[in-house]
Amino acid sequence: MDSKGYLKHIAYDSVIFGFSGEKLKILIMKYHNTGLFALPGGFVKHDEDLNDAVRRGLKERTGLDDIYLEQFYAFGSMARYKPEVMEAIMKANNQTLEGYSWLLDRFISVAYYALINYEDVVPTPDALSDSCDWYALDELPNLMLDHSIIVAKALQTLRENLERKLVGMNLLPSLFTMKELQQVYEAILGEKLHRGTFQRKILNLGILRRHEKQFSGAANKAPFLYSFEGNLI
Amino acid sequence: MDSKGYLKHIAYDSVIFGFSGEKLKILIMKYHNTGLFALPGGFVKHDEDLNDAVRRGLKERTGLDDIYLEQFYAFGSMARYKPEVMEAIMKANNQTLEGYSWLLDRFISVAYYALINYEDVVPTPDALSDSCDWYALDELPNLMLDHSIIVAKALQTLRENLERKLVGMNLLPSLFTMKELQQVYEAILGEKLHRGTFQRKILNLGILRRHEKQFSGAANKAPFLYSFEGNLI
DNA sequence: TAATATTGTCTCAATCTGAGACAATATTAA
DNA sequence: TTAATATTGTCTCAGATTGAGACAATATTA
Image (cartoon, rainbow over all chains, first blue to last red; front, side, top):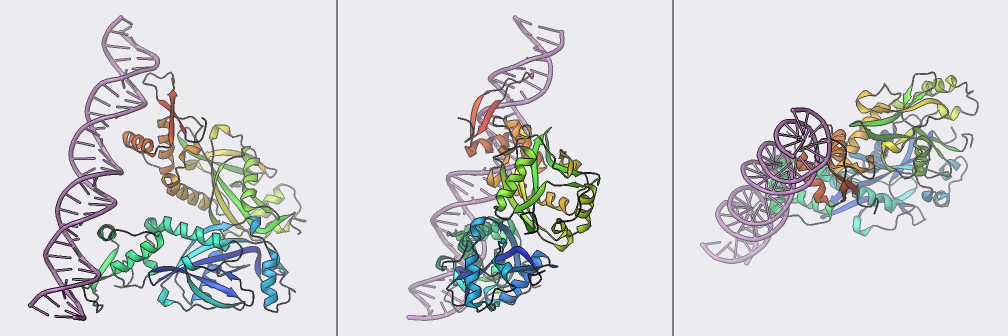
């Protein structure tokens, strides 16, 4: 066990989705001095469930405990093996490679996506990074290694699961309007939806509880608030 | 590199589906002397793509090269770590543990399912097994470790992907009747489908090419043969 | 009190789906 | 040669679902 208690060859990466300003965003880390942008990721302890390792990392990056989390693919091609990248990151942190050579070895990365309520999060960098911030999907910086591919596959999977697993409400606070929910769907699918049809379909699912109206102060009819069945009372 | 050139901690398991006798079946290996049944699996070489490792294993077990293959989950719980099981398998093969202690360490297993034409396959055991045979899904023996869970998740994923990815024809020879295709769908979904509706839906997809009729010798109207667009001419 | 923007709901046509019906075979029995 | 039988290819019809627009009902500002 020369790898600080972590399993060799195995890493995870997480695509953490949030919704704000009518846009879908993800958390991106920036490493010290290198100009490298990356997905939040980490390693698995020798006596730790893979899923628990990912939740541990999410807790550190977002402060949140109960997060909607889904594993979507294990990336294991040789093309992603670039030891010089990790070496650059270590050097930029004045880290000797002594005892850390396992980090330069090949890794297979299991990728997860998470859906969280943007407002609940305080993005927190780790020791190797100087920032952890939200980026809109259409304004991402260049990501290191194959992380752009991982993001693309995460979005594709999220789209496929949107209707099947009714997963959209995890991106909103516990109380939300129908319009906000529709905007989440539109941001994920990348297309406009018809208002009447959307409302009818969602309501017919019978999974929303309607609450009192929200008086937003806008010059128009006030919308109802809804909660996802299971939250609140 | 004391692990014979394989990555530590990483394995794969494959759920290989075939269709025969109106039933969905999978390939199961039986280890020498231990009475243990298991999914075909293996390890990843240090300089080998994960996907290539799985294809290499499939080639050895089935003789087939171009197989429909899909990764569906990485199993990484601590509950699946039972070194005594692997130890029993090694001992039953009179294998000293010298140089093989890495096999007793913890593994995260990436699971794949494959769809093949039953008739094309000659199941072939490996050095540790005395058999590699087809078992109908409703007549599986007890499988070791978490392999029953892996099979269940494979079937669930296959069902979800059946309509979305139009994956059914991979279980049939290149020429097949509409009835055979319907039986494949029914076996995967575990329910009967209405004949007229099924035929209408499949034909409207426009992915089948109709060929000359098949005179089966049965006392009834002969069915057309079809091929999946892309096979044959 | 009128104007404006947005919401909740309805209607209507077009499409899709589930279920049964029926003529068209390919063979066997008479 | 003809009738009987099982299965196939296709149609119809009712019911459900979907896509698009329309309209009355607000909550605020002018």
